[in-house]
Amino acid sequence: MNPRVGLGFDIHPFSEDAQRGLVLGGIKLEGPGLAGHSDADAVAHAVADALLGAAGMGDIGSHFPDTDPAYAGVDSMELLGRVVLSVSTRYEIGNVDVTVVIEAPKLAPHRQAMQDRLSDVVGAPVSVKAKRAESLGALGRREGVACFAVALIVPR
Image (tube, rainbow, N blue to C red):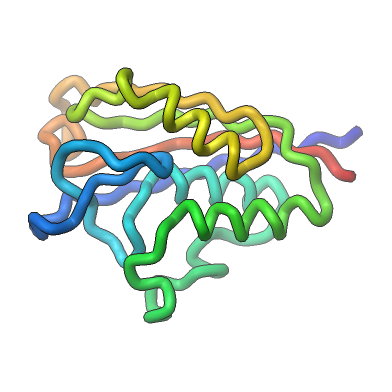
């Protein structure tokens, strides 16, 4: 069977652009948006990196560089969908587990929507958990959001 595991990580600071919306796991939330070249969905980025890492296919930056104007403001769920298509040619995705480190807003009311949206795009179960940084460091000071993801895949 030879299962493979990949770990993804992403972090983004909050944007000072009041027009930029907060998107996590493909769901629009209340609060300041994140700074980044795309829509800065740290959850989608971490999931993509976990899948790419498990498949030995590099990272999200090598597939969708932030120097390419074609990806400016792009919906990160679209990029995740492209990653899933690439990975799925050789592997079946078993599941993905995600931990989001965020002080605010609370993710509990949006958790199921995020899991459903991510699972639809990934084509496998995706679980989402939220943790606080307990006022420690930049994340605890509400300067941004970090996300960890672990993906399990098996060869087809």
